[in-house]
Length: 296
Image 1 (cartoon, rainbow, N blue to C red):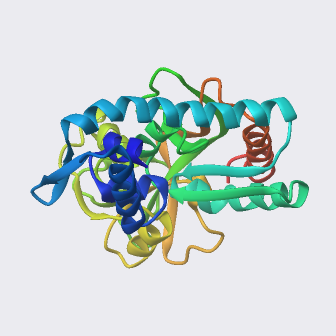
Image 2 (cartoon, rainbow, N blue to C red):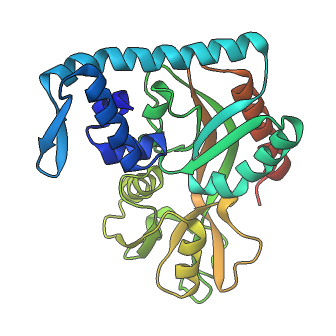
Image 3 (cartoon, rainbow, N blue to C red):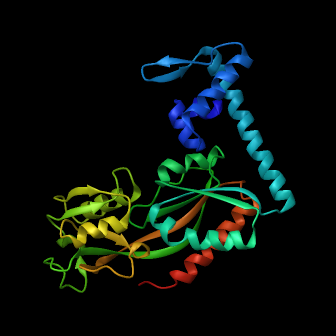
């Protein structure tokens, strides 16, 4: 816990990363300071900072946390046992469409496996692969705006799919069979939050087709909510096939010209592929093949 506090710079951020409560982290810090016989953190505004002793201990704490993670990984690899914790981060669309099916099959085959799942953006979650706080991250990467993969991270593609323009059924473009991207001037958009891969991909896509007057007024991570905004006539959206429900009343879905595509992949840290991670990737591949062998 002290390694997480030192890495993230606050009790709250460390608690979020470790998926425990803030008071639990504070209690461990007080216990560690008592054992060390000195202060390791001190108040700074509304947060905390490491003392000189804390900075000295932080490096060793991270080495200890990493060594413990590697030990658990090595033992699991030697035994070949698919059991114990499997900590997965995922973008919302994959969490809804692929992960439940994969985890259901894993739990049936390996009842001692203990999966835990959190949703979020890949850029925020991938660093947790290196620290061992997550075992796998299900991420997205748009063909025209590829996700940045840091050194030491491996990706396994699961699904390649098209994204469609979603507009209200009475929208001026709704009658088209395909929509030229260069024709999307002056639209009001619903998309994911700024900083997300989807938000960045939309902005870069339109800018590359000289559409500079876009208006992003609705920022929500869930594509189902974006489609509700489209159905209400409030916005347009760019929605991956995976995220489109079977029923989308009031919404017209139109292929883009040129096509807009994204890849959903599993990211893992090099050298950390334990039997549970291998099993998870295999089931995610099967889920992708089963549901998305072809475009909708």
